[in-house]
Amino acid sequence: MGMDRTISNFIRALRNADVRVSTAETLDAIGAVELVGYSDKEHLKRSLSMVLPKTADEKVTFDACFDQFFRFQDVRGEVTNDSADSTEQDGEESGEGGDGEGGGAGGDPQTQNRSKKKSKSKAKKNNLYEEEEEADLGPGEVTDAHSPLGKLLMANSRVELAQSMAEAGEATNVREIQIFTQKGLYARRIMDHMGLADLNREISDLRTDTRVPARRLGQQLKQRRDFLREQVRDYVEQQFMLNADVSGKRLREEMLRSVKLSNVEHRNFRLIQEMVYKMAKKLSTLHSRRRKIFKRGQLNVPKTLRNNMSYDGAIFDLYWKSVKVDRPKVFAICDVSGSVANYARFMLMFLYSMDEVMPKVRSFAFSSDLAEVTELFNRNKLEDAISKTLHDYSGGSTDYGQALLDFKKLCLDDVDNRTTIIILGDARNNHGEAHAEVLKELYDRSKRVIWLNPEAKLAWNTGDSEMRKYGAYSHQVEECNSLMHLERVVSNLLRQTA
Image (tube, rainbow, N blue to C red; front, side):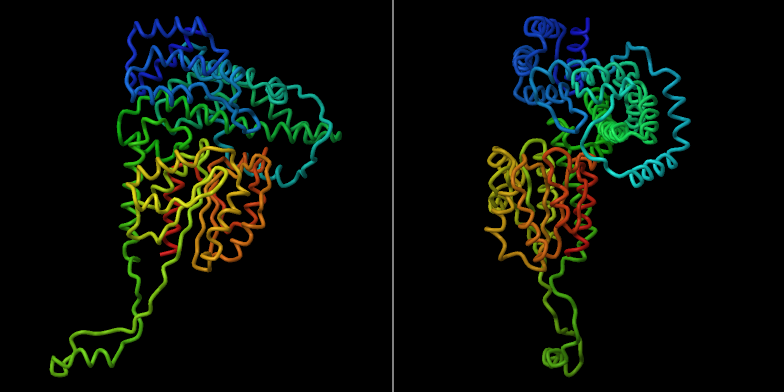
């Protein structure tokens, strides 16, 4: 029954994505799953792709929908691609994450949500107080967790955590979400159902414990709870994208402005491109008054008199001593590896859609070695240039240190006090050499270095992230993972550089 429900939910998501699936094809898919199971994710994907999508467009949509449906992150904020573990857990997580047949959301979560909404501001202040008051105890011995959710978080079991989230999603009917603004409400209900109240009490008790291992456990639980909250919000967002009826274009556009670009399916790319052009046109109109390269200086009396001699001394045309204003330069350095590629796609689209008001843009792409792609954009249509950039430079292991060295070799002499450098990437360097001294050199020479990180701030400086080192040599560091964020960044850039 669980397997049938999982595949049925997946087919429902496909139909919502405009992939036509008949009743006979549904039975074929169930038969395929009975044969191959969920233990091998790639094998399952190949098997279902043989019986469900029929056209090339449907195949692209199927691939994107499958990858989003069977996806999971662990509590440390790192995406797991482990085939054996993540397939089984993700099938349960996404497939059974709210079938509408569960025990309902219940009065309890709603009552708790209402009562806690009143003290939301107070809770934020208390959380800030906790973070400022308690010093990091570092690694070392920790005591055992006692709350059910605390045990689950400390066990590092992705499968069990996914199953718990799936059960909570089913109990809260997360698949019935219809409005994007309900994301916070459903995320809170899921967290409550997973045992947030007991976990919060345990963390509070551990903070006042006299034993260092106990307080260390409290810190770790608090950190993992914050990661889990972000993960649950992503899960609800994915469920909305997979299941909500968003056929109304205005509603879709409003939703796509704020949704994480990593959660956007391929079928929505064309609509997002239209939105980018619309946003770019609005910004261009807003800043068109700044297009003049020259600004008015003092009146040029000799030239005015000389050029008005034909009017018998009457002055009709005024001439001014004009001072040329050098337009600033913008360098865009984009990590195009993995999920970061979508963010790079739309940032480049923003920058090159405003060539009338945007200063000259030079673009660079890398995953390991860095290369300039400016000429690629000059010779091709924008969409073709972006697609070719992502295709040619997205391979290889991400190496920010090498990319910075390559950029220094190519462009250091061109960087001056009129230069703005925009770096878009998650700063995850696979534990390689960061070469932050190169960024410091660029920081010292340029007008401004802006680092845009598509990851949530909670995930910065975890695992192989070098955000702390790179952030020290950036004038501005921003979380940037939606069209709304990109629009704000580009708007600020126009104000500061035009």
